[in-house]
Image (cartoon, rainbow, N blue to C red; front, side, top):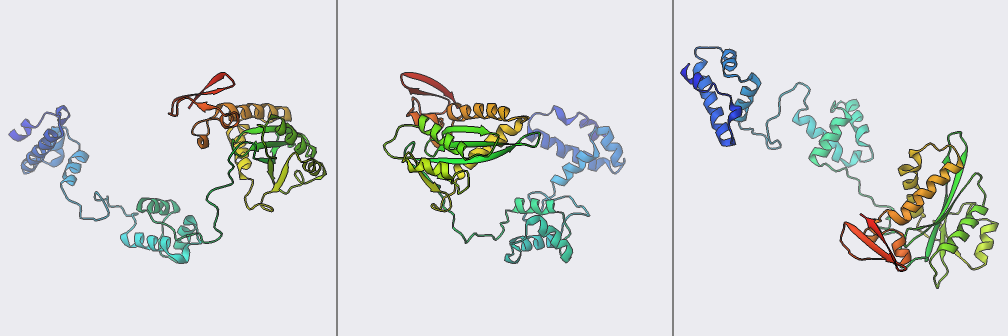
Amino acid sequence: MPALLLVRQPAKHLATAAVRQHFRHFYERAVDRARAYLPLRAILRFLRVSPRRFHAWRQRQRACALDDRSTCPRTSPSRLTPTEVRAIEDMVTSPDYRHVPTGTLAVLAQRLGRVCASPSTWYRLVRRNGWRRPRLRVHPAKPKIGLRTTRANEMWHIDTTVIRLLDGTRAYLHAVSDNFSRRILAWRVADTFAPINSVAVLLDGSRVATPSDTTPVVLAHAGVENVNAQVDALIETGVLRRLLAGTELKFSNSMIEAWWRSLKHQWLFLHSLDSSSTVGRLVAFYVDEHNRVLPHSAFRGQTPYCPTTRLKPLRPTLGWRRCRWNGSSGILRL
């Protein structure tokens, strides 16, 4: 009993970890001596130590002999056995099941009677153990680098996307972008799907584009909005040259399609699209933000206007970056 009186002070007043560890050992020795006279619950109540904490102290003293665990796991009747974990690993890494998704593979293992575990357990084991599915892509070999140009106004991308309004009608958005600068040269929202809109955005893009010694090449899909009599007549004038993506060129028109995805999911779909005028107002704001304000990773923080108008950053470091053009200056915050 005198030993219990010495350790009555709570351990929360101890400062360093070494002192706390020494005091825990002193607690345990005192409890071991007092258990010959008093029940354990009464001793812990007197010491103001919960049974859970006391047993946690005792558990830390026991070394864990498992190779794949840092600490000994708690025993549970629903825990997977090592044999079941090895069965999951065999099925995940087996070439015979490489065509089966991981979630479907978990259900298939239950039907085969090998492992009864939820798909979330399979995903957790795969992520924790770093198992890789044997899915090495062989065919076809995709190009690692897409279509790239060396100067502005060398190649354009034109495309049309459909935007569904609240009343069920559709608005058609046409746009032209420059491959080198990623700048949106021209765009137009229409209520009807008319080929004349493609001609209009091409003419608007040629008016605002940077002057060039060569004729710009327009990369477009082989759709009716890009291959028609009106667009053919414009191409025959020699103002532009046309290439069909996937037909005359192995590259796709993915650059402007990626911009469609950003426009819709990061801006348009955050508003109620009740009319074509609303869509036009929202697109006008996002195009100005894309061209003048938002920094692009391909230009190391510059905006699409910087490569187009030959703006030069005063400081190449991150933070505040200033670009000059035509005697004036503008500040871009990164």
